[in-house]
Image 1 (spheres, helix red, strand yellow):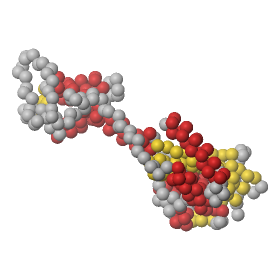
Image 2 (cartoon, helix red, strand yellow):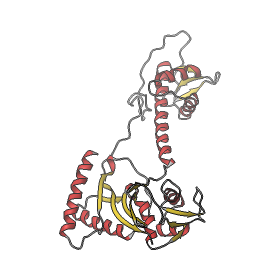
Image 3 (cartoon, helix red, strand yellow):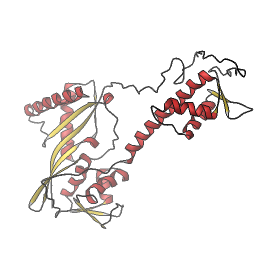
Length: 327
């Protein structure tokens, strides 16, 4: 990651020299690009949007510079990570607005129109309802109301009409307008954690059953909680689900006479022989030809981290400076 940032600064210096030496390659606005190697960074949600012509020109100029420098990598633009500095003229006062690239694309529509309906904005930007509502909420219903919404409610609907707020005022020369939080980000994190915990519970159950061969439900659950207590406290319902899943995948078998007793199944499909009462149970190791489950021989005892791959794809986001004028 640090290497990416260093190389990105070097690329930016090269781009500045390229623009200075090519009169026909003038972006027209201050334009900074940060290059990221996709395999080293988290994945980001992107959605298509019709960016203004000034931004399109910048992208094309940088694309020409980058393709002349290297053809082994694909350049993918992630505008959702971009930042724009817009000089908004509100009466006699100029305020610098720090917004995302998508917010800037929306605001610049009002340089040529006094008012626009929800449908008109969506047609111009070509975005989904979910994404457009987030943009409009941040600009018309949040702390800094750059747009005036009719009717004046705290929600956005398809019947709303928006116009530029030429009377907007604030005690600062520069304001940053954030986007509302996306619930999906939290959901993605929760899904990843849930998946890792399922693997950990599976591994713990397999380890326990390898040593005990036959166990009751309550004892198996208690030992599972004890083994995982240093990582997290598993829910009894989650343990029960994982036991059922392992049964369906032929790792465990439920006793036909006592449903609360479980025995371990060999990966080749045979049931491990139950020890006689009072017999000394040895913890022998059994190996299998198929891919082992986490916790079995040949497998990591904890869920392995997802490997990262360096691929020939470069993501880029921008920082530009534009102007928006009240008409």
